[in-house]
Image (cartoon, one colour):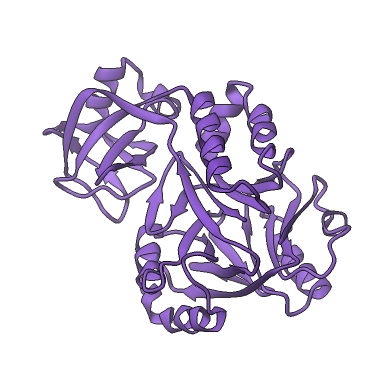
Length: 351
């Protein structure tokens, strides 16, 4: 298969798709102002081609912060695209769509991936989606778009998760997740006074969460939202750590980008050697896939900000391009199989 990336920083879709012929699956990344127009125009240019889209930045060796980006797969894949609606309340209501699409695609754990863009309630959505995918071991990569909107097959949806099942007809697929953080000290916290709906941590070990974070890291209220780039929380999940980013200060509590429940055990994380971690990820992909057709990735907005502030973002994109054809988008939360993670990179590699 082949991966196409086109972009226009001026939001000119015609420019972005220049050179794209016979696509078998398309992903659209637009801005809030032009999203609706881009969705309609894309469907007009490539009618009946499976497509999903969201509002957000995209990249290959360049990054499109505004305007429009298009990633398409051609030559050797089959795909189907659809949507789960009412994801804030009842995504399972539409699960038969996914069940039928899995049968239609006829893929397996070895050659098929699900790519999804979500408007929110990610953990619940992933649990719903993965209840179907796990039967065949199908892997998943995706993320959260901006402004509460996604698109599927030329239509815009709110409160929804757009997804595509993509089958590589000429080789394997495999998903990866990259964590650039490590445990800081021996801090362990029991969360309490949480608000699951608002993703709020009220207290840690019985002390207001904001105060605990400030005392350990010696930061002010105003510095918390940038300090989380270096020191997010973590939740141990088997042999893995789920990163929990701080979204905002809420009185004496902390609102996060991921749900925390009463009695959850949290740790504090610190930024590791991210340049070395990226090199290790690239080497792992080289080992697993001596021949690669494409890599599609989702990078967290906070990683983008961290890398940009440290003048590493452009170098990062150049390093990833050594894998071959690498492209992706910047999300507000990342999806990896059945897990909703923060401040991470997830990707799928096509043989």
